[in-house]
Image (cartoon, rainbow, N blue to C red; front, top):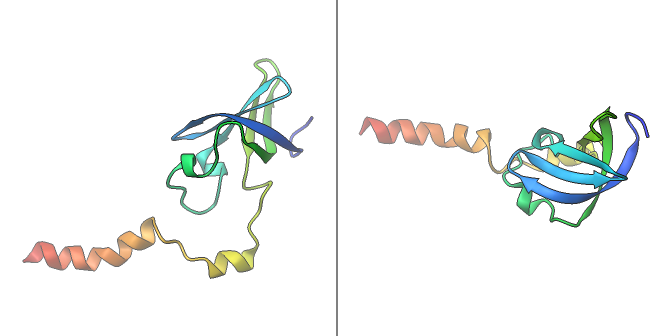
Length: 107
């Protein structure tokens, strides 16, 4: 096992900041920033405890038996699909609503 290898891990825990997994005696963390390049509202809707997910190893801590992992590197979204799928939540929604909020606050 080395950095950039693809491995399949078992989900053992879900926190607001990331997903904990296990793999051959190692504990791994997939930080929320390594799930997707798009906004991720809730990791609970993304996966469940006990699920098997494919990841890429970003870093290995042999002394503590820990892995830093990436889901988005193991499961890339094709650029064409990224252009077609619009972000429905996040900054774009705020930027569209901002003019309305400004006008409302002026009244």
